[in-house]
Image (tube, rainbow, N blue to C red; front, top):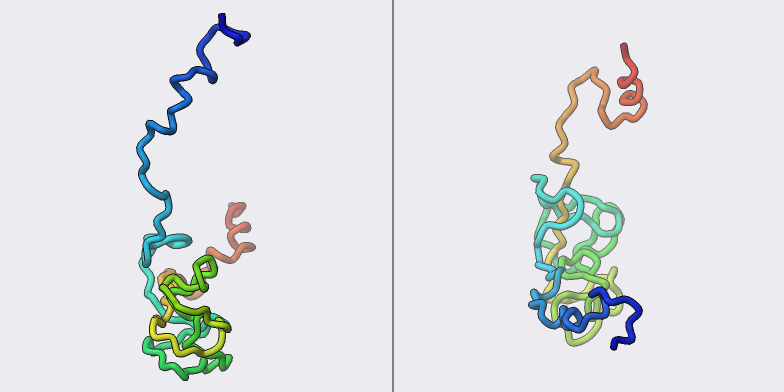
Length: 149
């Protein structure tokens, strides 16, 4: 006789205990593909630009020398915070294998693995509004347009 209170099959059945062992492993859910689209604006056509990580000023020249500074705020552009491989969750805060940690992520460094971080400029793809029409982003005019007769 069973020590269970009810006779129906349920959560204590032995055949369900090894359910996880039978399930094939498909690998990690997020594989972190480099360059894969993620986040806001996925699939929206937008031009890739390089912007200063500190002030957001767009830099026209994609080739960054090791001593280049931002024309707006004066911070170093050849730094970890402006690099494609900068990631605070990775070892030494870089997705590339490094021998030693770079002390300051905002100061200029001599890293040979540096690649400028390209950011999609989502504002460049918005349609231009005609003169004299109210912008749909203007909250007040959008609210008033709901109740026009």
